[in-house]
View 1: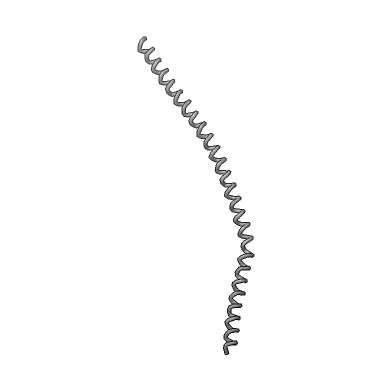
View 2 (view 1 turned 135 degrees about the horizontal axis):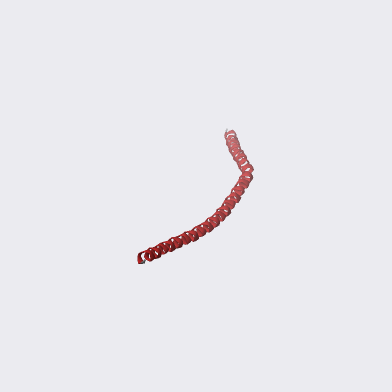
Length: 94
């Protein structure tokens, strides 16, 4: 009889240990899920920030395109003026 009651007590102790571990694991899983949700929200916020920055860069590039063509035209005019003054000086020297 003592052996049977000892086995029952050991079985109950083992069952309690298993239940405790299951509860701990469930709590751990819940906390991990919460962290995943928070991380997902942070990723979405960062992605939105990146997309906003990307659209800003595209808008700036659109604004810069005419300015760069204007700069190229001004450089060409400057070179033409230099050539014109050089030829004028040569003509005046002769």
